[in-house]
Length: 123
Image (tube, rainbow, N blue to C red; front, top):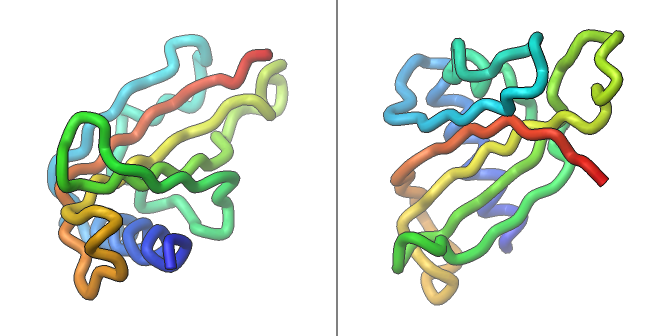
């Protein structure tokens, strides 16, 4: 049930971005890579994402909004082949939707906000 909800929400956001209908999109950039900036065109970046590329998905109650669920999906970040941290660069797309675990399954998905963040995994 949770995987289905995540897939539906992510698909809806990507489709909205492709149609140019995605509302507010907050974007934060990982300042370390010189190439591959995501915040120069965040809607275009979201529109180009493919659910087949998802590395990890997490669904939890949003910490900052009561009555909302946050779905966070990590994707690999396209970087130049000469980037030494290329395999460690990722993008997280977070979708905030109205509802909580008691409301599942949701017949409709009401998107409240979308965040896009670039980051580097360091060990």
